[in-house]
Length: 232
Image (cartoon, rainbow, N blue to C red):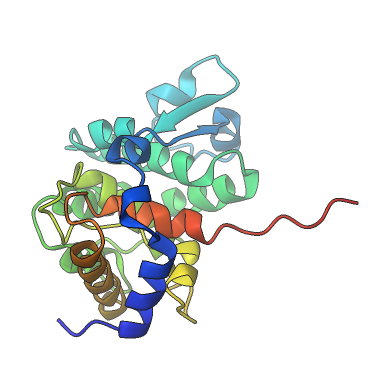
């Protein structure tokens, strides 16, 4: 495993003092609110609406813990679509633009079947292989569904990671890439994703091997939060 020392140093700098690490419970309790109406406005007519989008409340929320639970019961195309919407709702939050982008892949022919194939593989094949399924020309590839969101599907579908699971599929998005000092902040190749997991595994060994690796992903994401402009 050839690890980028530059990226590893950047990761360790963001992670900070080992004794100040957040707990796995803090990570798994991370909860995001979303608006079901944003999905329903552009929902594909040929697909059943996920049960939770039928609820009457104007806003709902979903946690990482709940997504792990939903991801363990994906067997059918309908299950896969429901899981996809739940995960993307967590990823997009209340952003109407992000929800609109997340709906588009569901309009692609064969999207539900491809989602089933990619999601169910996440818990049975190595992370880099499951990533390749969703990547360009892979059997689970869907136009409009990029790594920032399909790595979320892989992460939750694989279940809660344990400290010993050092190659668990993890979320890779722009903010994580920026924390690693990468110039490429979107569209990573399978080799790029493997490099990311290599860095996380090395950081895990040197920083807090007693914690699951998603604590590292969570910290890298929050370690490169966008700065708020000064108040007028």
